[in-house]
Length: 79
Figure (cartoon, rainbow, N blue to C red):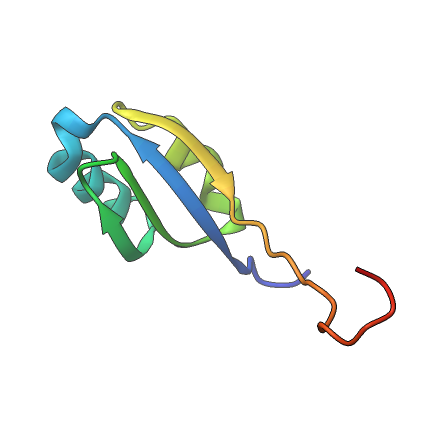
């Protein structure tokens, strides 16, 4: 069995409670990469087995795995 791997996430939180919710997220295992308190969101990484724990924190509105996009180079025939 392999060890749980870290996954990048975007978390939406109650902006009025931002500092306390971020503190709880850190305690639950989130490694915060960036914070946008005015928008009530932050990004970071967390072990995939800890995702359900983040979603259950009071003040967390949503947790989504961050998505990556790749665009073909400008000189590619497919655009």
